[in-house]
Length: 470
Image (cartoon, rainbow, N blue to C red):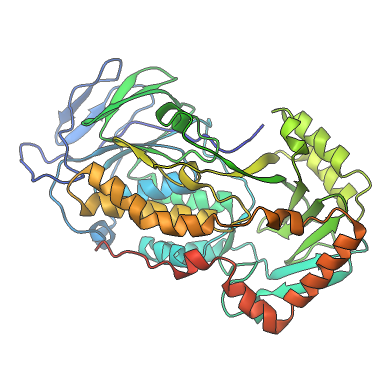
């Protein structure tokens, strides 16, 4: 089963300013040149930190020029940072921290970088983050081509439709609409010249104090870091090692499945959403691969008894969508052959603190808003930028982590404020309820309402002002 994400990776090499004493900052902590217990040897050789640990090779800095100076210049020796999780949040954090000359390792449980995933969008201040990274055009080039959304009935007749072209800005479909895997890979490739990625491994124990973090890896060995960033996703295992029992998930009473199916003649650049009685919905969205991204939603809590295996999850969906009509039989058939099947119980992460000593949560591991919030990818990009910026701006890591949470808590709180009633309202159980929903959809799709409704979809991210750390 793929409930949430547990991403991981490790090792590095970085130019070191040997023999120079620096003033104190969040990025300046003495970096040990000898390994901690069980770790590979680290020593200086011609200005490089060299490792003889397994899976470890010195990285080559790309020296991107002006972007290195995005943040205020602080003289320091390299701060050793370990990021666990190689998806959007983790890869974005790796990019920003290596721009500040940090010695960054990313550890990822998967044996290789993971592509795949459904459509995500980049909204509001997150677009400015991409501009600062020099990646906005690259993301535009990966656009899925989705032009709008249509709500359809069992005969595929359009009940209501909203086109992006008719809106002032983003709506249900955003201008920057890309596949999760495409965005994550772009960030991974942009950061991998400077950060060291270690795949096929994960953290099994964490011991931290005021001076840093000692981490033990499943693949063997223990290493010492100045900072640990947990960016693994909603079901983070490492979060439970450092914040045991502190997450109190807010369940949205909705099971969701995503997968890829062959493109059909009825598929177009317009996403389609179909509601069936019994609290069920299904839909399709275009991608840039010549295939179609499909989804199933089941409202309620019946899915909570489903086991962890993909076979059990698919069996649950087959039973749940029996006789649902529309193109559901085609989607069920495609689901059986899908290699990228993902199923989860949608739940928000609710935790009172995002840091514990020199360990900090980032992205869905800290604040998962679920797809219902529509801003998961955007918040990951914004969060990575703010975290790196505060680490550069403040004198200590503790101050930086406190400031990072202070800046982001308000926008996260607003983004998580989706009422639990919403999944119920958009998943009626009776035929009468479905008819009422379609009438509401027709009303919302009128130009007068849709333009105003679009502005209220993601108000927190749209109105967030990105701090300037230059």
